[in-house]
Image (tube, rainbow, N blue to C red; front, top):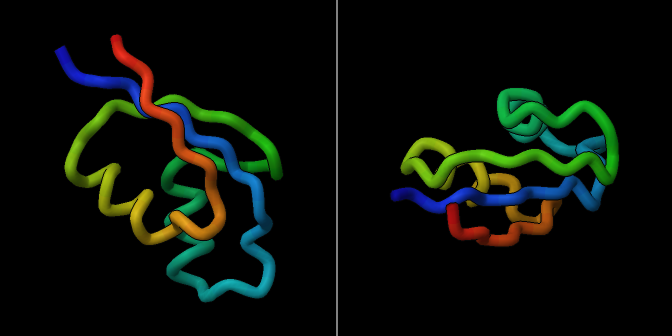
Amino acid sequence: MGAIIKVTLVKSGIGQSRKIKDTLRALGFRKLYQTITVKNHPSVLGMLRKVSHLVKIELEQE
């Protein structure tokens, strides 16, 4: 089926714009170095592209 994406927040959102902070919160991040798993979906990929400079992205097969 679809792939699972494993995302880790490696840089803080402090000092970033409100849109970036809201995107991090919408993805589910609450703490630095927290890892979340999300499904490969166009809306999620757009959010990850927006915060790509703050996160580490790993692709896992389902």
